[in-house]
Every structure is written in C-alpha cells, then in structure tokens.
Length: 276
Image (tube, rainbow, N blue to C red; front, top):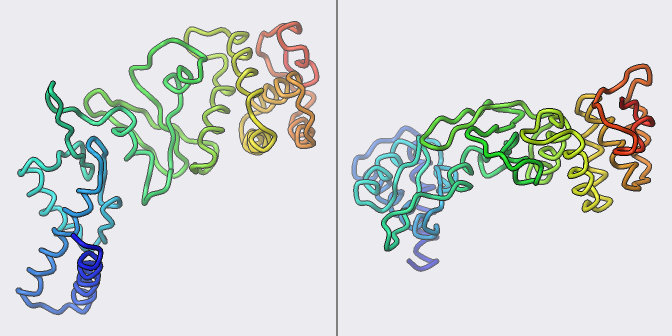
C-alpha cells in the first residue's frame, strides 16, 4: 500500500476515534472504522519480521480500539497469518523445511521486559550470570527484575520469578544493574566460589570506560553495603582513581565489616573497604 493511502487510512482511524468519543452511532460508519483498523493492523504486521513477537503497543492501537482489534487479530490467527504466544502477545510464524519455528528465547521474553515501548525490566540471576561467564550452570527458572511490576512467567519452557530491582529500569542502565546484582549475589552464584566470582567481575570492570564506571558507582550507592564495599575494593584494586570512588567509601560504616571470606592476596584492597 502506498504511503499516501496509509496516511489517509491513519487519518480515517483518527476520525473514527473522535466520532466514538462523541457517542455518535451509525452502523455503516462503525463498520468502515473496523475495516480501516483491520487494514491498518494487517499493514503493520506485514512490516514485522518472521519470529518477531508483538503486542497492541507495537501495532500502535489506541486502548478504545482494543475490542475491535482483538476481533481482527482473532481472524488473522484463524487464517494462519499470526500465532498467539500469550495474552496480548502474538508472532509471525516462521516456516522452514523442518516445520514451523517458535520465536527464539529473547523474543519470547521481550514482551515482558518492555511496556509502551520502554524497558521496565531485565533478566537477572543464574541465567544472566552464566552469560557473564560467572557460572556454567544452566538455570531452569530465570529471574526478572523490575521496580514497577512483579513479573512472573509460567508458560511452556519459559518460567520466571519476579524480583524487585534497586532502581527504575531503563535501556541505559539495565546492564549495569545486572552487573551489580552479580556483586550482590557473589556468595550465591551456582558452581562458583567467591574468589572465582571476584576474579571474573574484576575482568569485566576493567573493560568499562570511565563513563560506565561512574554509572556503576552511581547505582552501587543504591545497593546494600556489601555490594558497595566489594565494588569499591575491586575498582581500587584494578587501578580506578575517579573522585566518585571516595563517595562510595564514605557511604560505608567503618565500624561494620563485610564478611566475604576472601584473602588479601586475592583482593589486596579489601581492608580499605572493611572486607573480612
């Protein structure tokens, strides 16, 4: 469909919404509005790649049009154009010589991590720590961290438990928050000792640039003292000398010690950060 016709269609749908807002009724006009919305949905779905998951937000459907859209999506399911993966989440099936493929893991998870096009959650726990190279153990259940919602999933092979994040999650900070979660769980990472975890976390922090390190310290201040102490000890040990490191040090109580059972030769700066 040409850009001109798509533009006309969008204008018509807006007129339909105004028409309904005034509580006017006219069966033929309602019918035309429904057909226009159905055409809009079909056109937008055509733009999606096979295997991509999508919901009402991705289709840019106004909430007052959800009921009409649901009927249109139901017809598309019956026609085999799309498949339903969970309530309000659909995908375009990908056909191969081996049959139809489900969306991959990241695509199945994506609708739970975003709301109105913005990231509100991230994957954490053992599955994340495996990707970070902190463990080789597979996770049968994942954890999803969010500040604003409790996100639990129990659908097929995708199972997740909700945990509360220490900060509002955004596209710019979720990776740093996941890294700080690893510091928090350093004593509980499957199939890994504290020493092994600290060694790997030190290597990861060495790869951060100064801006990323400043962001790390900013969010570390929201975490428990054991996280602040260990982040500070590791940063100082790898040679970081930024001014905000002192702010991290000042946030700790010098009369309280952090028990990690790590030796001085494994983390030479540990005494500076009250780590035992």
